[in-house]
Amino acid sequence: MDADISELIDRALAEDVGDGDVTTEATVDAAARARATIIQKAAGVISGLEVAEAVFRRLDPEATVERLGPEGEWREAGAPVLRVEGSARALLTGERTALNFLGRLSGVATATARVVRAVAQAGGTAEILDTRKTTPGLRRLEKRAVADGGGVNHRAGLYDAILIKENHSAAAGGIAQAVRRARELRPDLPVEVEVRDGAEIDAALDAGAPRLLLDNMSPDEIRAAVAQVAGRAELEASGGVDADTVLVYATIEGLHYVSMGALTHSAPGLDLSMALEALPAK
Image 1 (cartoon, rainbow, N blue to C red):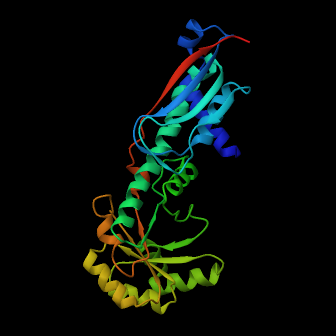
Image 2 (cartoon, rainbow, N blue to C red):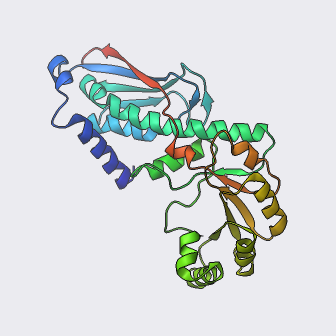
């Protein structure tokens, strides 16, 4: 478990537990042991098991954990997900934090899987990308959830790829200047340029941009852009794409990618529950 994820778990537990789980401490003996089973109550894709396991182990280092199903696979409602045996107090105290992580991340994976499956069934070939519109502090986990759902991760942040947007071009003096400066300064990084019309497409291509972000274009405008580019650059559609409109874009021949902020910023959580069974004390 990386240090930043470990710290995230600590903050989440501190937020929920504070100076103590008063209900559990008042009702459950410190020596009591139990077995907890997490069940998914809705169909979907599980993601985030490592984090959920770590929550319980943080509260009971001697807890034993058994995964009852894989991440990244569509499963129906009622499927068992995770079984944990250990301190009854630890299981009860960690329940909500573990389910919050697991429900959130599985919700992102499930939303992604629904889109990816729909695109494939419609005969679309464009890959579905995530964006940086993630929950602060959860980006790495949410992007992994997108991958578990069959999506493809875009850049991780501002440090691992160059994406020249409208405001960058304006500040640099134009698309051509922005592209040339970026390629000269960081030839080791991939470069993508946001374009809004035919003139900006020509400017980006003339400057050697290898990938274009077609921003808030209609399907007809994207088809025209595909024809204009004629294979000289990779093409990504972006801007307000959701589950209702993604098929229109992802099935356009010649479009390589469709990015969807909705995969992370609007994904509903997957409903899960935890049942507890008392065990004999050691």
